[in-house]
Image 1 (cartoon, rainbow, N blue to C red):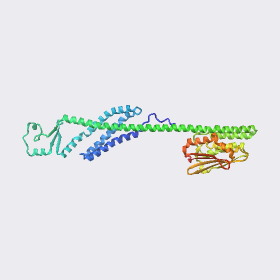
Image 2 (cartoon, rainbow, N blue to C red):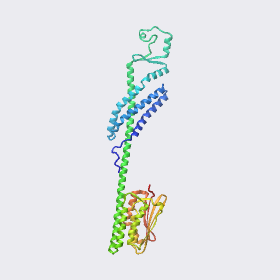
Image 3 (cartoon, rainbow, N blue to C red):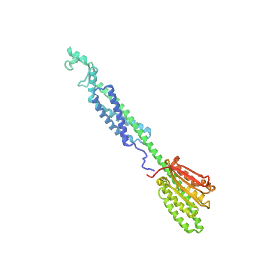
Image 4 (cartoon, rainbow, N blue to C red):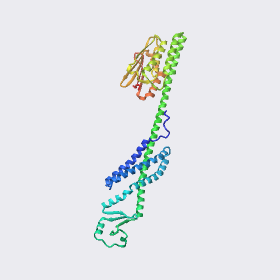
Length: 415
């Protein structure tokens, strides 16, 4: 199982950057679209300043990321509380940046809008905002009147403005505007934090799925290994019985040959991963060794025939999957009669399926006993553990005598 999976998975940094860019580019696009639809004055001048504010907003949000990332393993209510707190100064900073960037153009925008509405808007030295209707100015220029004491304090020939917004009121309006912008940025920062935590939860869910998959694969490997280990003792038990019979009957040369062949068989069958698939030609080679061992016991009765196309030599299959089936044929067909018995192993491909057939022509009365051993159950269990419903296994007596077993599994080749 992969131990590199962290206990608290992190959102990939590229995805974090993409989430930050996505939130603020959406803000930029919507604000620009709104300005275009309502026909804001000095659109181009506002546009590049908005770009600058958007870039600054991305930088401030990125600066918040390390703090937010520390909250990944924390409970949900702690995440919410901390984000609500740390977003406050960040939103105030963004509002201040916004006000500073647009400060130099604010008066121009106001004056342009005033002209469109028939007003002249200007500021005096004290910071007061003075508003005059343009038609009143024209009238005053055409018929100048003696200046009053209040007008004397203004420019020569200038009438008293129709509306005066003092500096204190303007400062109060700026503060209100700052708070309004800060609240908007606060909402956007919270929206990004919510998006980030959603991505973090998704990463944790994917990590949990990966761990679950690793556990399932480990459990399946253990099951396959257990089933594979059932085959070896079962086969060894039968072989030792055969070897004992040879020794007891004084067939020492045949016993020695069986021991040597048995040694070769186990050296090959136990090499490599017991849960890994093997090539069809390797599996057939192992079964030939086994049949050589049994041929020592039944030199006159055991006949074999293999029909394995060369095109299927690299087809993958579970190792030793044929062993119990061939053992059954030897035990219940060859050993149960005194006449020769032919054991046939055929492999074929049918519509992307590898089909392996094992047939013997032994006595029908003995063949029926084969279904009650560990062998057939082991084959079924191993196929189910490895392929699920994609593999099929059938084992039945033949009408005229003998037994036929067929394994069908997906055709997979060595990469």
